[in-house]
Amino acid sequence: MGALTLSNVTKSFGATEVIAGVDLNVEHGEFCVFVGPSGCGKSTLLRMIAGLEDVSSGEVAIDGARINELAPAKREIAMVFQSYALYPHLTVRDNMGLALKQAGTPRAEIAAATGKAAQMLGLEPLMARRPAELSGGQRQRVAIGRAIVRRPKLFLFDEPLSNLDAALRVATRIEIARLHRELGATMIYVTHDQVEAMTLADKIVVLRAGRVEQVGRPMDLYNDPGNTFVAGFIGSPQMNFLKAGSLGLRSDLMGIRPEHLAISAEAGQIGGQIEGRISHVEKLGGETLVYVLTEDHGLLTVRLFGEHDYAVDATVWLSPDPARAFHFDADGL
Ligand code: ADP
Image 1 (cartoon, rainbow, N blue to C red):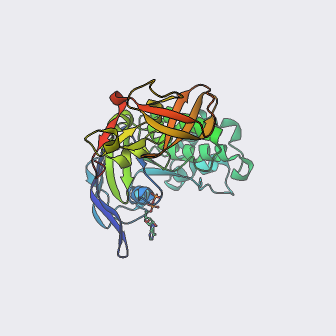
Image 2 (cartoon, rainbow, N blue to C red; image 1 turned 135 degrees about the horizontal axis):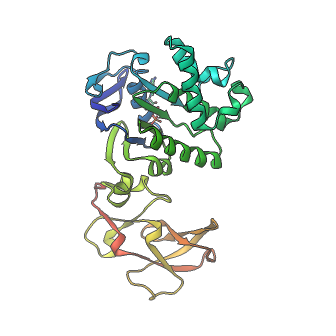
Image 3 (cartoon, helix red, strand yellow; image 1 turned 60 degrees about the horizontal axis):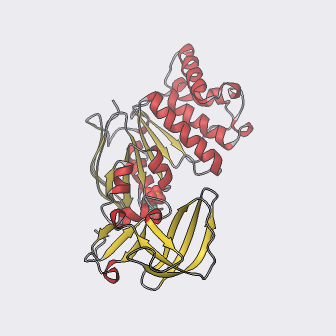
């Protein structure tokens, strides 16, 4: 229950096509993340699945049944928004139970369902409060609780963590992962944050300008990106791209992640070196990021474990680990 299929789905606003033929299968129980830069069509795709936007062409199906023409309320889908979308005049308990009440569910059943969701989310002490009396993180938990209570076939999340501060974002991310494990439900999650995509997803769909660039498990995209766009998007800090010709290689571009670029203050210590000048150093505590300006390849990022001291403007030599390098042609493939 809750398997989703998109078949050649397109969306145009007027003459502008923003989703250009998307095919996708999401299995029952899978956590699928749509990721990509702002404006690539993630929300539009999610809204078409929810029924909040019409599909211009193609088919959206749940468990094999076409739902293009089905009203949003009939789709057995629950959506959690970035803005929470709670009713300000209703208590937490009533916000969570509203959809069941509107569906005519008996009161005892509503109480049991909201009670169980509140317990899963640690919301029990807050049930009598109104949204204005809650923190942002608590409101987001209520919005998630409201989705759980409906027992939908499919959960949709539209950038649910964007309005939370950094610490709460991590805590809520972990909570969503736990809920997914406990509920075993199909979840589709939109984010522009590749860390959220890497940590939450069973399956990542990388979108760019309304098209699917690559679909795969997080570590498969990290270890085997199909093109420079995916390679640059997955992994943080971003992969370095070197002009392979000037390194004596036959491919056009070499991709090397910042953690696979060795740095030395002396020439001749390590093979295949690139000379550069330290432009900036960021000490993050557990790791140090060193930005090195090179003549042939521009600014490169080196990631070192622990704390390191490098003087700005000092000359250094970089060496990519050949075993960890990616090779791309002139088209980025
Ligand atoms: P994302 O969620 O990846 O940031 P969106 O799905 O919101 O991207 O938007 C994809 C593209 O569709 C953008 O270029 C956006 O401007 C356009 N778009 C979204 N909604 C509308 C609309 N109602 N009318 C016209 N263009 C829209």
